[in-house]
Amino acid sequence: TDEVVVGVVGVGQDITAINQSQAELTRVANDLRLLIDTANAPIFGINAEGRVNEWNRKMAAITGFSKDEVFGKDLVDEYISDEFRESVRQVLDDALHGQQTDNYQLPLFTKDGDRVEVLLNATTRVDAAGTIV
Image (tube, rainbow, N blue to C red; front, side, top):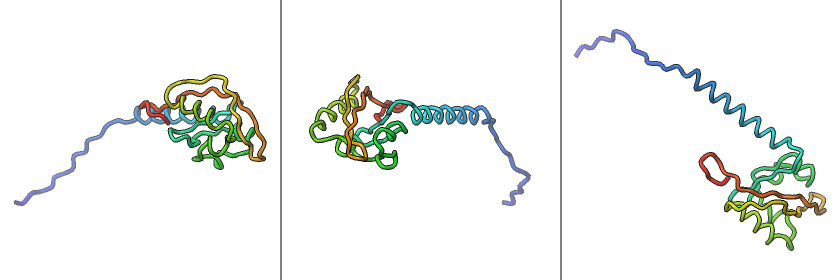
């Protein structure tokens, strides 16, 4: 067969609106990240395994530990004294299972070895799919 190419057909789709929507979602996500990081309240997060996955500037100022120093570490094992580990773990486990705790005095170790208390409101954090993050 002697097929002769006579041209090319291109099919396109206008994705301007999709790109604009994605840019807006990125902007909103960045705004929320900045809000958490710069809040004048200590904010931390743990994942389902109890490892730190959020640590804002106020937490760093209070404890002396930077986000990089605590990220991925077990909050209770690393930063809570022995006598409070069981009760703190229970409050955090409750939050991971949907039970909120308000106004709990959370005792934390600082980088200097001092103890500080943070008034904690613990609630479950989930992503858009409902998975605990």
